[in-house]
Structures are given as C-alpha cells and as structure tokens.
Image (tube, rainbow, N blue to C red; front, side, top):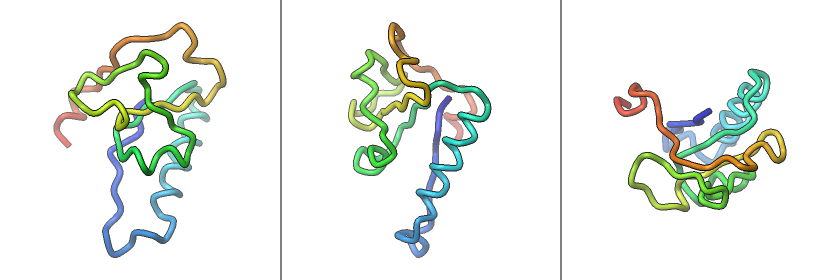
Length: 96
C-alpha cells in the first residue's frame, strides 16, 4: 500500500497534525490487512515512524526519485523477505 501524498498547511505545521495523519494511515493499512507500506516523501520525516529506504529490501519506485526519498515500513515483521522489484502506482497517483 502507498501512503501519500500528504501535506499540512505551513501555518498548522509543528502541531502534531502530520504525525496523527501518518499514524491513522498506518493503522488503517494494518486494519485492512496490509503487511507493508511504501511512501515517497521527505527522508528526514518518515524515518521517525520506522520507515527505511526501500532499496534495503531491493524495492524501487517507478519514478526517478532519490533512493532515500522512497521508503518502506514492514507492518508485519519479515513480510518483505524475498520480495523485490519496482513499485508501480495507480494512474490516479500521477494526477495529484
């Protein structure tokens, strides 16, 4: 499952809203039975939620992005073992 895009208005940042959105998204993914989540986002932000660069698992984005900006989180430990390749997004993602 892909988590993003997400943004918080500048005047509302630093109030925990983004963290609440990420946590709610991850809880929703887990409740729906997803074992892992990818995100294309700020490499300084998402690691605080335990996201790591996806290249550590042999997983890349279909988009030309820096390796550190495309990250993954195993919701179920070990769920990415043996999986590798290119993540392709739904066509609607490109229209955002």
